[in-house]
Amino acid sequence: MTGAGGAVTVRGCLAWATRSLEARGVRGAATDASILLARVLGTDRAGVYARGEKVLTPAELESFRDLVERRGRREPLSYITGEREFMSLPFRVDPRVLIPRPETEILVEEALVRLRRRGGAPGRGVRVADVGTGSGAIAVAVAYHLPGCQVVASDVSAGALQVARENACRHGVAPRIAFVAGDGPEPLRPWAPYAAILCNPPYVAEGEEVDPEVLHEPREAWYAGPDPLGPYRLLLGAVDLLEPGGFLAAEVGAGRAEVVAELFAVHLTDVTVRADLAGIPRVVVGCAPGGRSPAGGGEEG
Figure 1: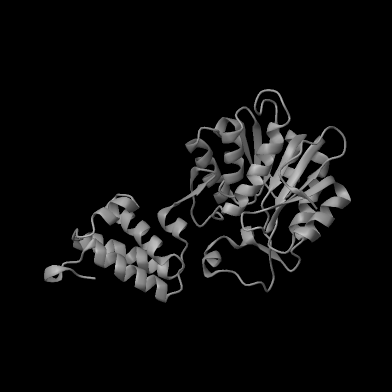
Figure 2: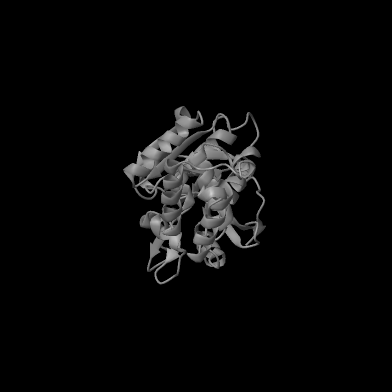
């Protein structure tokens, strides 16, 4: 970890941190080490690698060691940095909210494709709901990428709603998003009907293993309980809030798309499934009867 004369260099710090994190089971240890050191030095990863022989001050070294220790305890990197990118937008995150995942981008992309095919001015007059908004990633991304639309975003957590509001303000879409407290479809009713209702519900079932990092995230945001289909049954209570031809779209855990699609088919028409980039069926979409249902990018389920 030291250079000439016992000085602690950037290069030595990176090597030490990478070994330390690898020993504690952190995937992508080298990348995480460079991100953490960039945070300490007030630069980006390229800046870190460009300063390989820079000697850290005692204060910088202490700060870096503290961050590496936090990551070694499997605290998510996004909580340490306070930020996560989603749909090419930076979002503030902290332990009050679930960290947005790339898989959820598939849900947003599918929704945007369908909503844009409605015709007319982009998003004008379109109302969308986001159930269990968390950091506001889905609601903010839809509002940002579909100018003119109106979004209603709900969550049971007051802390999550505060984070979501901050993210909405950060990206200039707060005037077009109504944040409401509550669980399930009921908080959405005053603004019905909706062209789309979107949700990334908790879908980890009782007894299923999760990565150590997930245990740092709010349990109510990822743990579905003994019945992993329970959140989807609750969500289907919102079907009557859809306008004719509107759609309900939800993210699902690996291996559950088929059973969720069957559940959707009882209440909705034209049920389709879209896979993520790894080929795992990840998003289930169903349409309310009546009207014209704009097709998305999924495969029929």
